[in-house]
Image 1 (cartoon, rainbow, N blue to C red):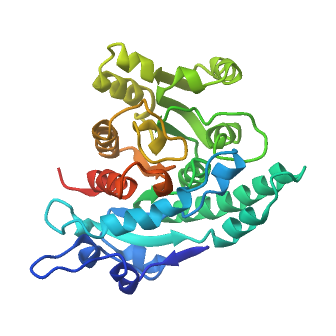
Image 2: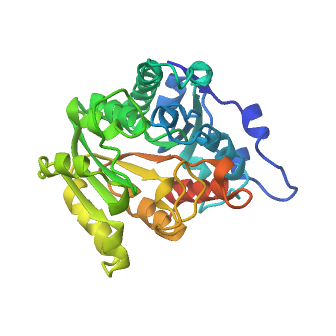
Image 3: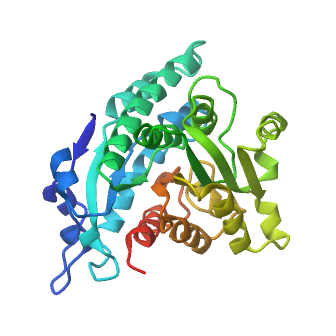
Amino acid sequence: MSLQFYTREDLKKHTSARQGEEKFGQAVGLVNSWEALEKSDATYVILGIPEDVGVRANMGRAGAEKAWSSCLSALCNIQSNSYTNPNNTVILGEIDCKAEQQSASKLDIKDPNYQSKIGSLVQQIDIKVSKVIAKVISVNKIPVIIGGGHNNSYGNIKGAATVLKAGINCINLDPHTDFRALEHRHSGNGFSFAMEEGYLEKYYILGLHKNYTSGAVFEKMDTLKEKIKYSFFEDYITGTPFKQMLEQAKNFCANSPFGLELDMDAIKQMGSSAISPSGFSLQQAREYVSYFSRLKNCQYIHICEGAPSRELHYNQVAKAISYLVSDVISKA
């Protein structure tokens, strides 16, 4: 299934032991098979998708493939205590995207068939992601998925819908819709493909930026008003309370199974594939994941598009994702 299960030795490489303390990486659960995962008492399953093929396919800046490893080094070194809750969590491992990454790096962007070739690589990753997410959800665990481009929203949604045998809803904190045309697969059309194929039922975009949404996308969404709603980031800066925006998304999507998506582009000056000088604060992103991940219908959490190579200060992306993950899995 193209999943590399992690061992304690794998986590030791990311963990700096200190006498008198127990770090998260020393206490978190590990499994070596799907059977062992099913038997585990843990609620949350953390896994990585080290790829940026989808971002490249969208003519974006590479770098998202490093977010998982970077996050792991930060997460493994937070403290293990009754609040960080390592006993209720398994670090599963990573989806193997090495072949697709290598193939993408060898493609010539001037090749007239570049888009179809790199789109095919994204589709290969789609298959891997959807199968792994379906397997995790099928054993009654909640996947917390880190890294990669937002193309992986498609695999997450398909995986969950496959298990539930019905389309699911999705809430996305993002300056972009990622609801672009049904062309070759890339990081900008995961949600449009998921809805077209019946895996995505209702979709709410929280904090959409007016400047970076095309007229064609607005026209498409206007034809799907019963299925798609959004709030603008500009609504927030002109006075709409953030909590009210959360409630609007909840009322539209959270009464039935939904996936939770967070694009790091939404956070002001965060190292990401489309870093922005304007956006929500990290504190608001933390509030977002804390609020929605605790609702009973939340099927998965996906934190994507972080790019350590574009961060504004050392360890920015790793620590930010680590905070977001710990907000999901920690005891209130």
